[in-house]
Image 1 (tube, rainbow, N blue to C red):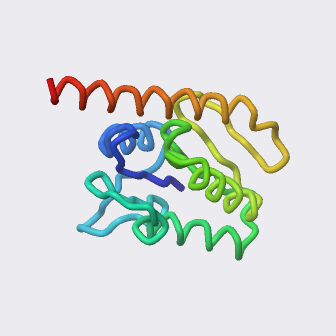
Image 2 (tube, rainbow, N blue to C red):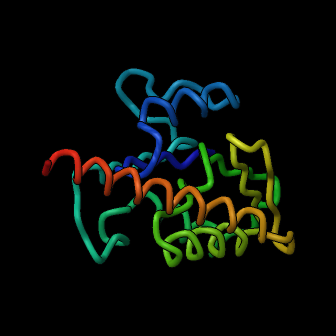
Amino acid sequence: MALITGYKYLPSLEDQIEAARAWGIPDLTVDGKSFPSVLVDDVSNKRSTNWASLLKRRQRLIAYFEAYQSPQVHVFFADPLCLGWTENLASELINGIFAGDAVIYIHETGQSYRIGDDLEALWKDWARRLKNAQQAEFRRKARKAA
């Protein structure tokens, strides 16, 4: 299973999909229909303080794992920041997946995380990536204004 999210701080949808395919997720569409194992939310051009209302597939994924134990399921993310670009988004998703006893797989680092694992390195990497993305956006805006 893969959760692919489009947002300004994240790798492009195409890059995330390519990484998911490399990991073993099948092509996204057959006869114009999405596979249920790949969930895509694209909020690339959105601004909000209520992301949950815009990330419907993500919310369905969390609800599924909160309702069903799925210890054999691995959920693919291209990089740590794909868990969420705010601490609340990332925590909610991690806790939701762990509620179903599923595994989080981060493709870029090759790391898998299960409930009870030490997440300190994951959170440090997440924070570093968020800061880098925010600074890159700031520099881009500063160059545009100049």
